[in-house]
Amino acid sequence: MKQHDFLRHLKVPVVAAPMFLVSGPQLVVAACRAGIVGAFPTPNARPIEALDQWMREITEALAQARDEQPPESIGPWCANLVTHSSNTRLADDLRLIAQYQPPIVVTALGSPRPAMETVHGYGGLVIADVTNLTLARKAVAAGANGLACICSGAGGHTGTLSPFAFVSAVREFFDGLVIVGGGITDGWGVAGAVAAGADLVYMGTRFIATQESMADAAYKQMLVDCTADDIIVSAGLTGTPASWLKPSLRARGLDPDNLPSAPPRSYDSNDVNKPSKWRDIWAAGQGVGAIKAVDAVHTVVDQLRSEYDSAGRRFSNLLQGHVTHGS
Image 1 (cartoon, helix red, strand yellow):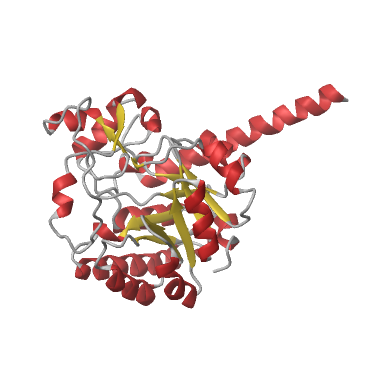
Image 2 (cartoon, one colour):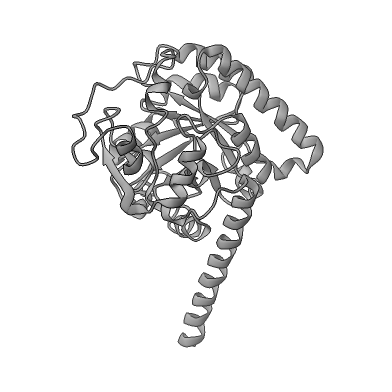
């Protein structure tokens, strides 16, 4: 897969971001069918036999989709792989990635290096999930094809840099694929990110509140009801700073203003008990206030495209106004 070939076929330059306990085969396939990139984190499928089943389901569903609609209208799928040293299932995950060959693999919570040989071996792209410039430079040095720049305002594990500052700084030393994520939930924000130098936008929170996500119905409704004021960032739950919905913390007996100190980090996909621990503690990004309803994925993508086109027309009109004024 050539690095940027797929971009020109996307309906809108968006990745339905991989979300813990939220992204599954149904969401991935719906996103790809709608013309964007569909992604899921491999730790969502436990034990390893479940990951095998998920990947088979995704590849078979997308093969069928290519018989039902123009193949170029279908976005590529993406597996999000945890490369942190605590993940004892990494070798098994890579074995299945080699078997099912997702066109894009995003590495997270560790160096992209462990995935390079496997993914590049079948012609896939390796994108490194990074939260600062030091990690970005290390990922580029390791040979990553792209960077997923996680910025301030992102849901779940979040960064601290402004999306505009991050993209601008990365573009000084990297001309590969750049994905940016952090508080973007509409097509206007997508257009702004692309204008600033990004190729794609990670959009997670907006796709939690879709009919195809695995999120609990109460979680989806909480997203409709909340605004950015209902978000708190804390490392007290996973050991890594993350954005949480205050109402979900209170519902679990936790005080958002007095959360525990950060525990040791552990991201072992072989731990089949861990997912239940976080099932009722819910994350969201700062763009949550833009969510007004729980819709089908294709409806969300159509709205994003409409907003993206409106932003483009606005920008074009502004430029034309400057040209006319200057003349």
